[in-house]
Image (cartoon, rainbow, N blue to C red; front, side):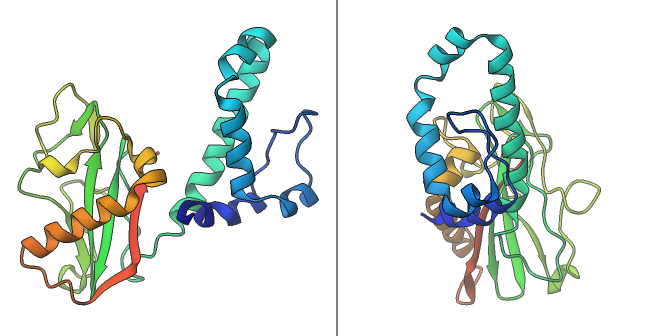
Length: 215
């Protein structure tokens, strides 16, 4: 899959603690496995994790959680590097508890900030669907925030009212879930929105299409 390909190089650096013997994977183990192998192993045991945790106790559960979290911390920065940005533009930073959908057309990169369910933008964005970086902005990001690269902030909120209707991930799908299973749908939606705003999408660089999740 597209996401499996994106994460494959990360296996060379990530240390996995998922074997039945409890030993760290050796270099040869990493060379012989794939992301799909790891996914299948995690999916196989994920349904019984709660039962296993109750049986084996809190100390081992704490260790497992730390290892999974540490592995996630290794993988997420590598995942972001698979996104192609305009070389002259600083890499945009996605909001924690949300993400950004990015599309490049000609000499301009367009990124739409999005929030997960239970979060809303810290600034009103109903008429500000996206931020841009390109030749017309002197290759700096248009943003409501100081710092230049952070495009939006998603804060805890019971109501999602500050952004456009499409600027929120579905109730049943966070940014990470969308990235794993329905990234193309969000990209298609954003491209259509840009076209409706009169932006010529003829020079759309499909290879640069990317959804980035904050962490």
